[in-house]
Amino acid sequence: MFKHESVETSSALLVILTLVAISIGGLVEVVPLHYIDDTVEQVNDPETGLEMVRPYTPLELRGRDIYLREGCYTCHSQMIRPFRDEDLRYGHYSLAAESRYDHPFQWGSKRTGPDLARVGGKYSNEWHVAHLKAPRSVVPESIMPNYPWLLEQPLRYADIQERMLALKRVGVPYSLSRLEYEGGTTEEGTPVVGNLETFGPDVAPLLDINQAEANLVAQAETGNYDGDPAHLTEMDALVAYLQMLGTLVDFKKFDEDHFIQAR
Image (tube, rainbow, N blue to C red; front, side, top):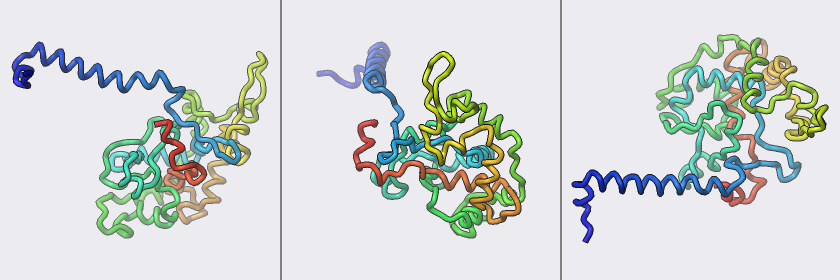
């Protein structure tokens, strides 16, 4: 009868069996990738056919930059795992599509604070401002540090076009030309699907690099995220970013098992 002791006392046998185990595990992970078209779900609105997941608007993009700068990702993940307890607490498990325009993505595994993948719309702007300024004023047991300077620091956005251009180079579909915005055919006869057709007339203008600064200011004034319409601050941008997290996909429009086939 084969004894485990014989494996532990034979380095050669242990190496061979370890390699076999690693090979089997690797094949289980890699082989399925050759039988699926994509690892990212295609999430289109069943009613309009438009893509639900869009790139960040200029204001949200600056908010995400501030989120990274302040190290929020070190305590908050943005990845809800497909387990019942997480579904009950946070909502539908995270889709790969929801992070397709993140560079880098914010999945994480450290949860000193709660997961933020679906925090958008859960609290009011006023709550977020109070929480960021003095966390214990709304969550007494919180160990999160205060971020009062976000309300005082003017938002710098003179380089927002350059930031969007950098993301465009790695595949984020911000539009720079009329062809990328409206779609059509290149001089060589190659058809191009524009953002207008992909995301619709409400979203496409927000992804236009040429109008980045105007769109940023307009969203901040309309949303009034920091409660002070007279000043555009870093708080405006960060709250705008937090308020959109997890709001792009309307899961009520899909059957409960719709996305299981992509797992």
